[in-house]
Amino acid sequence: MAQPNPFLLAADNSPQLLPLLRSNPSLASSQDEHGYSLMHAAASYNHLDLLRALVNEFGVKVDLKDEDGETALFVAETVECAKVLVEELHASISVIGDEGKTAREKIAEDNDFPQVAVYLRVKELEAGVAQVNGVVEESTANGTHPPPLPEGVQVNIGTMMPEDEAGEVVDPEFRRRIEELAAREDFQGEEGQRQLRELITEALRGDIGQERDVRRRTS
Image 1 (cartoon, helix red, strand yellow):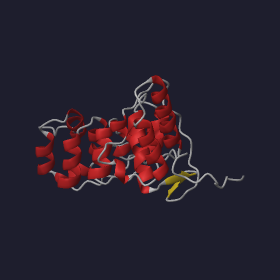
Image 2 (tube, rainbow, N blue to C red):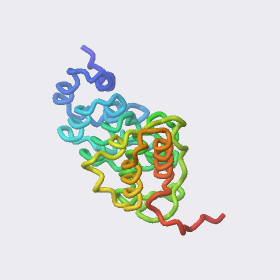
Image 3 (cartoon, helix red, strand yellow):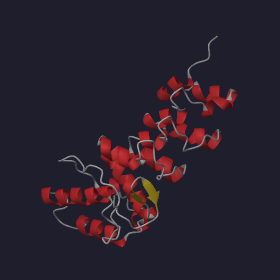
């Protein structure tokens, strides 16, 4: 009898998968010819308990890379999935894929899941991470500029920065502006949402939490 395809089982979150992995633990870290792994499948399809099992039970590396140098974080489509990867399983937000982008930059550039990009930018600010010319480092140099959020996007302040995480943000200017904006009576109105979009765009671009007097790259 042919063995079931573990990648298809992971995509479907099939109850057959974990018994299969327990009978053959080496499958948990397996990758196809493109480096696609069960971690990538679980993240892409938002199977959070499977992510936890792969890392915690089977010891799969949370930053396992595919052929493009991208980890499971690059394919996260929900803030919940990104939080599990980063906060529970300790995935790195600083991994740079072969295209020279971090997960946050690639997600922001694709513009499909802007709230995930915002969440990752907040985590970068908390960690004091900046990116300069494709190199991630803890510095105050100016970062690259991914595209702004699409016109008309509204982001709930609780989604971007839950109350229990607000105190963790390192940059006081970012925190001050968020709190000031959220306290306004017109926060949910057109003007409040416009200013929130501008603030989020600045965060995504790396314009907040970094010194204005920066070195420019010279050719």
